[in-house]
Image 1 (cartoon, one colour):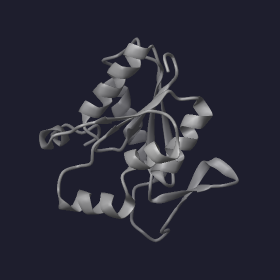
Image 2: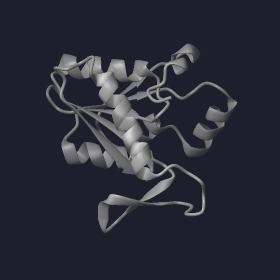
Image 3: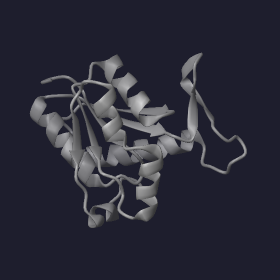
Image 4: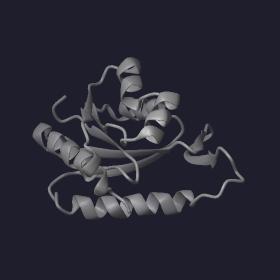
Length: 161
């Protein structure tokens, strides 16, 4: 696992504690970091993996480019604290467990780093309906999944505002 990329699964409101923990693991292993965001409101285009389509074309939402740019800017600012660390950002669409597993296979990743869900009934219901990404990754592929436990106050310091 040493030297193989570490995938840190992110979303715009992810607590910085998850990123910091993932960076620490990657640095300890001498690994490159691949931050991966999966847009669950979009589906990948089978003929062009770099393109995706909204699940509901009539829904109000920010553009794909705007979302990507916002996350990239926040990651640039966060990673300025770790200038010696090699990293990249990948923006995917579809089902998180499937897309993250495909990415890991494609880049030969050593492990995943994910945070626990946001506290509260709504997030619990969403996880119950969709399932835990960490559990699904643990069942469907062979790479270790590092789960960062989060407290309520960790959610007060998100990656993007």
